Length: 154
Image (tube, rainbow, N blue to C red):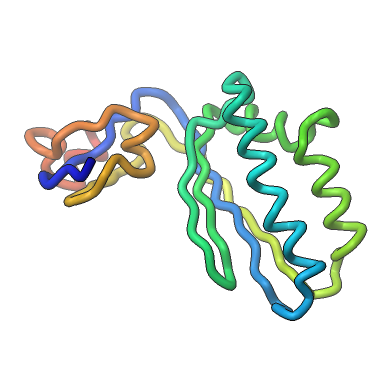
């Protein structure tokens, strides 16, 4: 459903924004980057089947450099998942280091941002629920939510 009015997200709890992706540096080396690309859906399946692991939601885009935005309950949840020896992530990470390492064939990257109530701002117009609006309360951007400054201090 597309919401034609200006909308925002009201998130009442702390959360983590985790940006993660890969860059295909040598497109002809499919055997190097395809396993990396195929590993993320397996991790997402595991995370969505086990909400106690802390993933709240995600958005993603594809291209030579991919980007995925993930929203987590806390940094502790994110770190616990990354280091969990029984999760999909750790063996995939070890395999990447073994097969790709520092060859330059495919790059991976991530950035982590800690946030919470009053420490973020967002607006959506002519959009379906997206990003924070999918994990928080999807509300009209009016009253205290009308301006960016108002949304930050709400």
